[in-house]
Every structure is written in C-alpha cells, then in structure tokens.
Amino acid sequence: MPAPGQWHYKARRHFWENRTLRLVALFSVLALCGVIILALVRRQTGTEGFLVGLTLAILPVPLLGGAFLWLDRVEPTPLRNAVFAFAWGACAATLVAILANEYATELLASTFTASPAQSDSWGATFVAPFVEESAKGAAILLLFLFRRRDFTGLVDGVVIAGLTATGFAFTENILYLGSGFAEDQALGGGGVGTTAAMFVVRIVMTPFAHPLFTSLTGIGFGIAATSRPGRARRWLAPIGGWLLAMTLHGTWNGSASFGPLGFLAVYATLMIPLFGLLIWLAIWSRSNELKTIRTQLPLYAMAGWLTLPEPLAIGSMRGRSVARSAAHRAQGAAAARTVREYVSFATSLAFLRARANRGAAGPDFHAREQELLHHLWERKAVAQPALTHAAHTIRPPFPAVYAWGQRPPAGYGAAPYGAPQWGAPQWGAQQQWGAPQWGAAAYGATGGWGQPAAPQGQAQAPAPVQAPAPAPAPYWQQPRPYPYSQGGRHR
Image: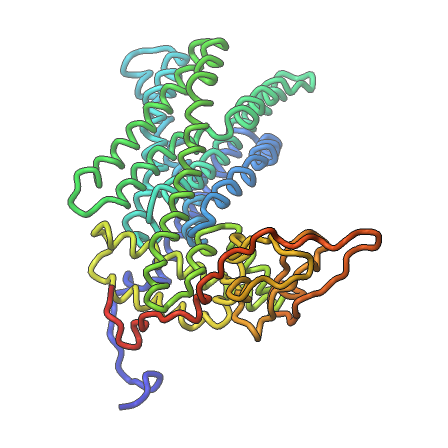
C-alpha cells in the first residue's frame, strides 16, 4: 500500500465540514459586524468624538482582560476562544444590542404614547438587560456547545463571560464617551463636563459592571459543565444564571432613575458586595482546580507515569514557576517550553480523570487518556527533573537543623534531581544558617557538599541536640507498580 502522502483517493467532505473554512467565515462575520458598529458609532459621535471615546474606552481593557487571563492560568483557555469571546462582545453583541434597543425604544414610545424620557427609562430597565445579556450569553453558549472540551468548570465560564463582556463594554463606552464629548462641543465654551462625568461613572467606578452581569451566565454554564449528562441542573443552571444576569442588569440601569442618592445606594449595597463575592468565588474555584490536580495525579504517579513529587509541583502555581525557571537556567528556553507543555498535558489529564469520576468524561475517555499519557511520556526526560526539583523547593524533604557544613544522616537530603547527574545538595552556600542549596545553579549544575568555615571571631555552630530518625529510602529506590505500557492494570 502506498504511503499516505501518495494516495490518489481521499474521503470527500462537504465544504461546511472544513474547520479552516468555518473559522475564516466566523471571523469574517465578526469583522463585518465590527466595521458596521464602528460606522454607526462614528455617525452618532462624529470623528473627534469617536477618537476621544476610543482613547478613553481602551483604558480599562488591559486591566480587565489581564485579570481574567491571570485567573485562567491553571488551565488556560485556548487563544482562539479568548479572541472569539472578546470579538463577539465588541462586534456582534454590540451591533445586535444597538439595533434592538433602538427598535424597542421606538416601539415603547409608539405603543404606550410615552415621552422620550419615559421610553428611554423603560428601555434601559426592561429591554436592554434582556437584549444585551442574551447577545453576550450567545458567545458562552456557542463555546459550550462547540468547544466543550475546553469548557470544564466555573473558572472557564467566568473567564469566557468576562472577556465577552469586556469587549461589549469597550464598544459601548466608545459610544457613550464619544456622545458626551459631542454634547460638550455642541454647548461651546470648550467644557468637558459631560465627558468627565461619563468617564468617572463608566471607567473609574463601574468598569466591572458588564463583566459582573455576564459572569452570572458564565457561572451557570460552568455548573452545567461539571454536571452529569441527564441531570436537571445541566440546563437549569444556565437559564438561572441568565435570568440573574438580566435582573441585576435591570436593577443597575433602573437605579439611574432614582437620582444620585439612589444610584450611589445601589452601587454601595449591591454592586460592590456582589463584585467582591465574584472575586472570592473565582479565586476559590481556581484553588479548587489546583486541589483537583493534587488529588487526581497521584494515581498516575503510583502507576509509574509520573514521579511521586510531581503532583505537588503541578498543583502549585509557585511550583510551576520554579520548574520553568530551573529548566530555563539549565537548558534554555526550549526546555522551559517543554516543561510548560508537560504541565498543560498533566493538568488536562487530571481534569479528564475528575470528569470520569463524575461520569461526565464521555465515551472517548480512554483514547484521550492514552493520548495525554503519550504526550507526557515524550516530554518526561526534560520536565520530570525540573518538577521534582520544584516540589522539593516548595516543600523541602527534611528540616534544616544540622550544624554548619555538616552533612545530614543517611537517607536525608538525597538530591531530588536524581543524583549524581544533577548534583547533590550543597549546604551553607547562601551564608545562612542551615539553608540548603541544590547545586550551584539549583538545576542541572554539579556540586558537592560544601564545608565553609565559620566567620572569623565566631565559633562553629553547635550540633543538634538529637538527630532525627533515619528516613526511608528515596522514592526512586522504592518498588513501584509497572506502568500501563508494561502490562499494568488500568485503574
């Protein structure tokens, strides 16, 4: 049979089944929406107002986007998903909201013969929340349906919702700030009172408003992602989160009709506490993700796929950073990238195992598990020593209570790198009482047990009163079950 590159016949597919074509079509539609929305905003604000609004509206975007990406460091969402979420909020959702809100406001004014001020107030309180939260929530729904593998929990829901709402608020702020600047210019005198008021309210006081509203929808989808198929909360949670998002959005918009005191009261008693609660929930969810890693990966360590200290390092953000830094110092940027990829695959493996324990992994669990184990096996030669070193760095294997320059008893302090190739620990190099240093460069360096003399005029440090009991043999000298590839039973 000829090699795959020499085949004359290939399976035929419909054009809509081509992944590249779908991505190009999707982002082309988003780009078209962006062009249309920018043209509409420029028509309402003028060229100068558009440029002023764009300059001021972009200020909170790096802060909000960076905060959501920082929150998603345990298992980062793919870049294409993050870009899609922001672009959907900034282009498609905003275009739908502007067109629908204008139509609804005119319909209210003609149906109930209300004044323009009343129709604007009713539209902002009852119509805008439904339209805007539905338009923003559509991005979360699309990623939940078509990128289900990347949607694993509450953190993913909050991050996707936050990025979508950040993009929506960015375009909306251009419109409001640009309109305020146009009003100031129409009044003459060179005043910027309206623009300054808009900037304080929308950029300084409430840049988190839209992310807070839409995050409730994202939390609902996050709960659905962690639920077993067939459970009622799998579809009730997204609906409930969407309803809560609309309710909070409508309450916030309606507070403007209560006057300055009512607005400040809602801001102080509702918005700030809920924002603090969202921050706590997001950080707690990320800590729970790290706990899941430390809970699920020891199974693979017992089977021989990982070393015993690795789950501790992978389940700690500090441990990950120490491992990457150590690999970079020893072998360069390529080694650090290999460690990062290894950690990413191990994290996905832990979450896959957690979903399997809940009965939500899907029928392709075994194939995906074997694929992840294969990726780990290819990178273990570089990543495992660095992660083992990181684990011993964040949690030392023995207490530093020995005399200056004195080697610990047998069984303690074996080099976590797998001596002798990675160097044994060296004591006293930092001129600090009993502080260990793993090799001259902490990773990949050779070194021995230092014997520094005491500073002049000072006596040698006293020996410990009671030496600790000898520890068992290091983990790499202990018997372990065979890995899967050598006939071990699948657990």
